[in-house]
Image (cartoon, rainbow, N blue to C red; front, side, top):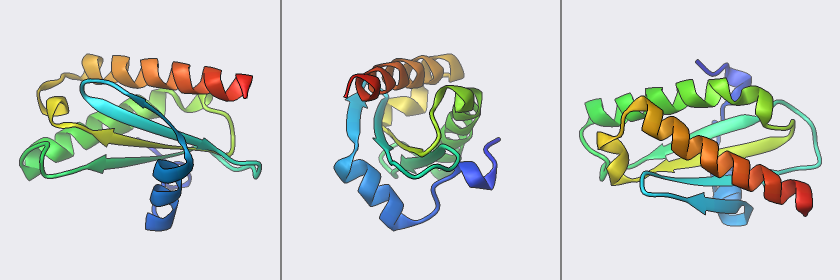
Length: 116
């Protein structure tokens, strides 16, 4: 589970990451990443719309994504915000498929941020 310090909670933070951050997409997820010069713990946010499914399905997807992101906390540098948008295909994905999608996107986005 993600601690409160590792979660995005304000709408303005979500908008900033989605609008200004770098993006990586897949069949089940779209991941946006924004690094800032200020420190602080890495933070994750999740956007799961009603297109994904019923409330039970959306909450299952959210719980799986939170567990995946808790595993990757040590790989994400301080001062980095990540927003993961679940697409409708995520409703039928299992934990390992979601984990692979997040892993692929984080690797790509973090490699780009090192080069930039």
